[in-house]
Image 1 (tube, one colour):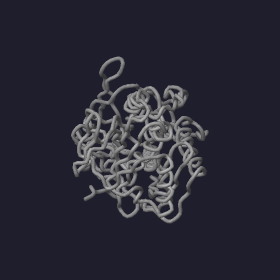
Image 2 (image 1 turned 30 degrees about the vertical axis):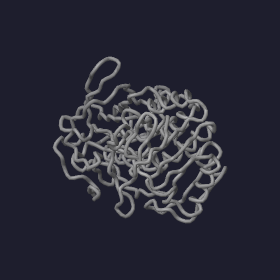
Image 3 (image 1 turned 90 degrees about the vertical axis):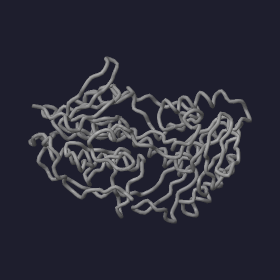
Image 4 (image 1 turned 135 degrees about the horizontal axis):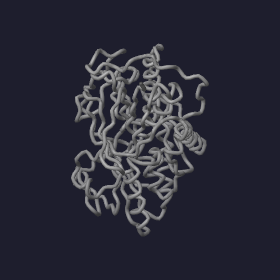
Length: 404
């Protein structure tokens, strides 16, 4: 009888888990189902490029996983019953239900409008492909000289505003940031960022909180109106709401609380990876929502699942950061080296070399997902363990608490 593994979400983390498990487990022993709302793999780290008018290489999931033994199910996840071990889905053939022995929750996150009035009606976002395509269409229709405002001075905001400014130098592009421009960077990194922003002609509103968005402007906390024919909202991400409607233990952010192997602390047959998981890194700090966090958690979960099913030693590799990679248009980049817990150090790579570095990172991440069978061992391990008990039991490894 095959052990049923269902992976929800086929982004960087979910696709990585499915491919890694296919490399380690025998097809006779496991049935791996990958559920994706879209038929193509979405390179989320490139959606700002898509919005700015660039065409991305199509990556059909069916082709990526052909011959791997992974079954692709194109459907939207509508509910998870963690006690019955079932997932409700709605696809081209209508609603259905999937039963699992092991579940990997990798549904990730979407944009977070933070409840600011007018954002839902008037703001655009690049957290998903449909949103990026809508922004692309809107930008393409803008006449020269029209104002575009990007709200949010984090990595997504910086990449979006510089990409738009480079692609459309005829537009009046601005950035609104709650803090100072790049104030988390090293002095070298911050200087380079300002230099690129100035060269691209981007107007920066620092220490500015946007409190309302209208069709033609945004209003700040002090009542100032910033003209904006298009407002792009990039102030952070909100986790997918599915987990919060289950009996899984979740944090205040809606993320699934996991141990060091990405296993749910309340349901041992459930794992969570990427943005869906409340995982900790050095110093007990929660990992930030990012591809840099997501892929290592995917590897951790896949290796732990394979080890537990085959009776091997469960690996628990400490998760840490090395750098923050920021594209600043197609010709410039910034690689800010950081401590293990994601604090900037003096060292930073800038300019064209940094842009090439970031491009290689993006290509490498997509290539790893698109070639899940590369490096497949000639002898995969036999599953020896039985499915986990339906009643919650104590998880292995240190538990992660909800951050204050």
